[in-house]
Length: 293
Length: 271
View 1 (tube, rainbow over the protein chains, first blue to last red):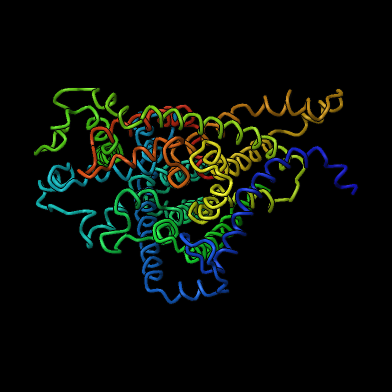
View 2 (cartoon, helix red, strand yellow):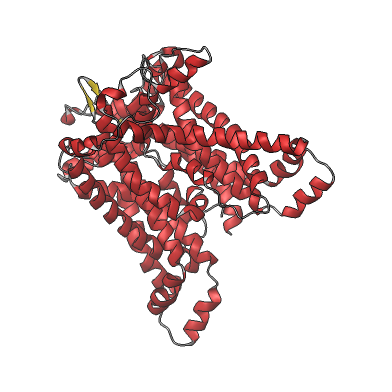
């Protein structure tokens, strides 16, 4: 009681936010869990039957679910691999370039733009670049004797096409954050390393990676959480096709609910998706916690 | 010589990177200004032969004007609500330490939730409340993304503000509200601005909630852009013109908030 009295001001500042978030997130989440226990087909809302964990069992036995899980894993790890390796390389180059100067250059803002573009727009821009006959990509690749590729229309290249769009959009994020991390390291470290004649590779292994594990972990976890949210680009670029070659868990849950109206099934899938997000978020909390408190 | 060589390699890498990241955006802008016949043309033209703004006006027939207005209404209301409540809750977390680290992190984790996981129940609730295709429905769902972010960011900014200033003000007889309005908010004004700008970007670019919850009246710009697909294929000229219009406010914000971009994008973890 005393505690409430002392903190009444803080509590009343907090109240509206907590009420809104309870209403728009916790309540729907509980509702999702509840729906996931029913066989609920939207066109016949009154004929829902309690099936317990039936939907979950159905999902775990569904080949389609495992296929979308596999695709999601491929999408997540391939995008992160390329984003991180290209992003790290660029961050190092920019860092070398910036040292001793104020970090204002024209090209850095140009590199920042991709992550500001709405994902829907990114999806369409890449479809435009991928046009088989008229697109600039096939035209340019033609000069070095490659292609023409069918990009999103071909099962063997569709996943790579979606991945390329995501790599384009989010590599700048990795570069920018790593660059901020590099700049915050004590510059004496690099001066000493330079005097001792350390190569870039040695600096990377012995200085940068050990001192930036926290930054790197945060980047990787944020990217993982975001790729579990990915849906806009898939919606625009491939709708999960051709066949099932780019079907991700998120988009499959969306289709199950809003195209096939299997709401109970879609809800159960959402719960599984939520659990995966919570696991990643808990990991992220550890790294955020360290500094903030 | 070695020095010169490594410098050349460095600049080649930088130029390649700039070309790679800027080219798709460049392509979007020039496609929107090319005559339509030039879009489907071999070999593709990397500079527009003539510049036309016809498709920017044509896009009005696709209800671009209506959807831009909707987007502005939804985005502004969302931004204002999220920023105000975010400041209040962020201050409360930073100064009163309610819930320690875990309650604020619970708030933040809502931001990470896949939209698909919440959209089914939200759709059914909005259906029951007859809110489908209203601004209110989309604003509420956009708060789901922006409010947790705003709370978390503002918490970080208030933690950085030295507590001694507020203690001095208390001694001088300021009430808690006066401290909030006269000291805490003005001193964190840049942080508040950056938080608001990020909320604007999130809401402006948001697609899934707007897609599911709008039909015609409340349709937003990303949903209209997604709908440029017709039975004859995609209307590339109109699509790129609308996309360019969707990009401009966000690009302007990115350039203004450049300094704080990292902080916003890493949820305040890296400054």
